[in-house]
Image (cartoon, rainbow, N blue to C red):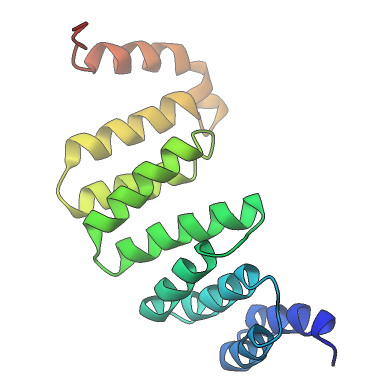
Length: 165
């Protein structure tokens, strides 16, 4: 099998829950690949899908140290933050979620996971603010959309006043 066919084959193996075999193929690609970022990302996903988050964490970091397309870069950073949270590395995860939100403000999928991380450290104020912001700015249903402007008013009224200094 050629290298061009090996990556899709390794991905298919992972998707079919043949994680070890998938990683074996992916690791073999690393020896000749010019673009290693996507390979590291698929290795991370293979470990993550298998519930081996500690191993996945290192490969997300390696993927982010390489060249990735914009979507893969987001996925690697997002999955790194989620994995850090799952491993109980809450301070690191909070920092990663904050960076994600500043770089990808339109990616609403970040917000619930960031809120979960805030809850993990008992910051219920931050978690509540994040979730309320999510509901107001990204209403999930028509029923909430009807109340969007009302909720937004309540939410903005509940925010502490900003000093103009």
